[in-house]
Length: 120
Image (cartoon, rainbow, N blue to C red; front, side, top):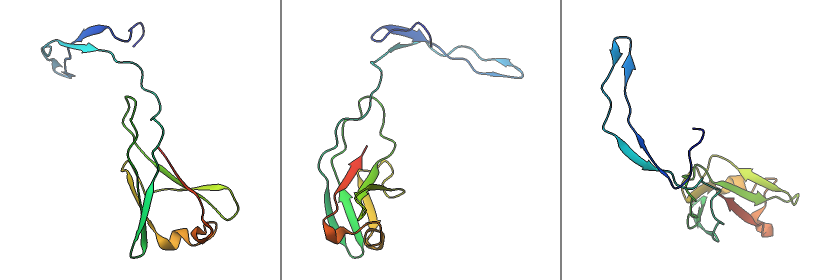
């Protein structure tokens, strides 16, 4: 919406429409616009443990700064010294479960103390 300002209260109502006409308005609802959302705050350190053949990474979820966190990226430095993103293991949960077989194959090699980074 153009021309609205943060911190001001606006009043809204809603109506439904179909091919037969328009409904009556909903009750008027006041809405105060909060500041624009920004990127999540800095991530906390992660912890990891092995459960059978899976490495489980946990961390404290950062403050979302007004917009829900939709995904975490788990990044591992590979044996080639560049970071690689492991996708489809975290989603929006603060826990990632990664099969050990993924982390022990190239370009990863956790035996060489590869740093692991989680980005929100």
